[in-house]
Image (cartoon, rainbow, N blue to C red; front, side, top):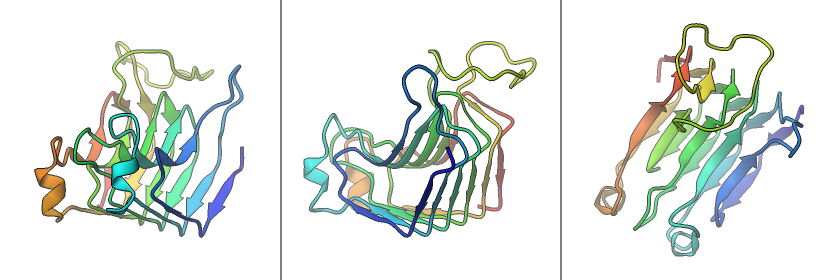
Length: 178
C-alpha cells in the first residue's frame, strides 16, 4: 500500500510496464500513485513481446484508490495479437483516478474492467447494489486524458485498434472531459 512510482521511464517491457497485483492470500496493493512517467513500446521492442502480445502500460488487479496522472504511454500494440490497455484496472479494482495522461498509438487506451466472470476482490460493503452477475470494476474517474491513434501500422495490424476508453463489466465509473 501507499506505493509511489514517479518520474520513471520504462521502454520495451516484455509484458506489462507496471504491474500492480495483490499478494497471494489477500494482501492488497491500495493507495498508490503512478505519475510523471513515460511507458513505451518501440518498434525495436515490439518483436520481443511474449505471450501473444500480452503487453501494456499500467495493469492493476484488485487494487483500490490509485492515482494514475500526468504520464505518457505509447506504442502498446503488436503485429499479431491484441495488446492490453495503456492503463487498466480490473479483477474488482475500485475507485482509481486516471487523469491528465497522454496515450498515443496503443491498441487499447484506458480500461476499467474486462473479465465477465471469475474471482476478484471482495469488499466489506455492497460495491454495486442492484447489479446482477459478476462486476469487474467499481467506481473511479477517467478525466482530462488525451487518447489518440494515428499510426497506420497499428490499424493494419492483425487486431488493430480496439478502444480509446473501455468500460467493461464496470459499475459507477465516471468518464469526463477526455
